[in-house]
Every structure is written in C-alpha cells, then in structure tokens.
Length: 302
Image (cartoon, rainbow, N blue to C red):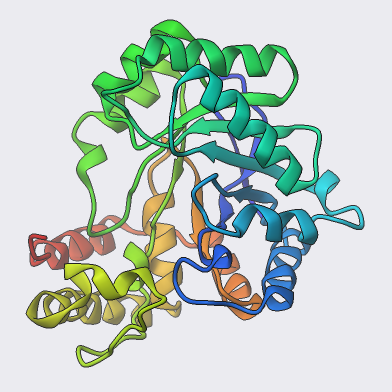
C-alpha cells in the first residue's frame, strides 16, 4: 500500500482508508461479525486508516470490538464530533467515542461540519485543548469550504480536511484544494463512489430498502438515478479498457490529485475491501483524463 503525508508535518498514512459509515448500518443492516471481519481484512491488507464519527450509528462500538487482539495498535483511528460543537458537547462526545472505541486516544479528531450556531472560535479552541490533553494526536475538520477552513485555522492549526469528492461532486476543485495545498492541510476524501452511483453495479430499476439511507435520496430515484447510471456506464468502458473495475477507476481518479492524502472508501464485506486495493497503483495518461472529463460533462444536476 502506498502512503502519503497528512499535511506538511503529519504522519504517513495509506492512500486508501476505510470509511466506517456502512458498518454502522447507514446503508442497510449488516451482520456485526462480518463487519468485524471487514475491518480486520482492511488492516491486514494495509488499509490502516479507519474513519468513523459520533453520528455513524453503531460504527464506533463495532470498531471497538474489531480493534481488539492487537488491531488498535496497527491502525490510524479517526473519528468526528457530529452533533453539537459547543465546548462541553465536544468534550462529552470524545469521552463517549473513546469508550465506544475501547481506546485511550484517537489519532485524529474532527469537527463533522460547519455550524452557524456554535462559534468556531470556541469549537476549535476546545479541539486544541483535547490535543494538548493527549486524547487525540491530531485535529481536523470535515465538510468545510475554503473560507470556513481559513476561519478555523486562525484559531487552531489543523492537519486534515475531510470533504466530499468524487467524479460527480467536484466543488472542492474550485477553491478548497488550492487552499489546502497552500496551507499544508491533508485531504481525506469521503464518498468517493458517490454513495454507490460510481460502482457500476446498479440498474435504473433498483429499489433501495427502507433501512438504507439512499432510499430517501433523489439521486437514487427515477430519471435522475437513470441519468447518473448512464454516465457511470460510459465511465465503465474506460475502466474495462484499463483492465480495472469501475470502483478502482473512481478511487484512482481521486488519487490523481496530489493534494489528496487518502481516499476513504466504505465497505460492507471483506471482498469489497480487497477490490479497493489495486486502485492505489492505477495511473492515467493525459488522453484518458481528457476522455473521462468529456464523459463527466454529461453529469446531471442534482
């Protein structure tokens, strides 16, 4: 597994990480033993950066059980405070996360999103305090734009930003990537498969079960769903020509950007984890990137 440095002075981490939202049940109920096997398969294969959050349902407690028997010492463990970003709420959230994760510290603690209600000055000062106390080695933010990152960084310099980034969601290319590069902030890209739109495994008549969050998302219904899948079908021809899977193509396309430190990919079982591995070694020619950009011009709005 290849590694990149997290920020200008952070640790080396694998370029592919495990996003732990699926094992919390957010995309359908899963067997906990299989989820534990998924986590351990990831670590055994070099995918040692694990990312979860307070809001990821049962994800933290499942990870806590998966990381027994020496697995905690082998991974870079990241979680996020998700609900309230007031100082007391952040302090309570990390204590709850540490208990659920069955650990004394996390490697990275992140604010899950920007809040107009909670002053960023207070939130970031609390994050820095937790770092000083040794409850987290590094601090970061998630789902902030460039202006919001700038406001947060003035209070407490942080190592990472975790934005949504994939072939269909490219907003961060306008300003955010440049800000992170200039400031020395590592990027952990989440939702690289656009919640499954970029896997190439769905057909327009697919119906998601009620326990799967996608059952309520407009992108996964009707004509809009079909339009996205049509674009993925075109991208799949590029993947086939390169001898890789659509999933591997989507991950590798994100890693083409040097600003991206790690791509966080969710998985529901060990086989999906193993499919991700080859993406780290895929490169693109200029012609291939131009071909992909031409296809992506047909990406629907919404």
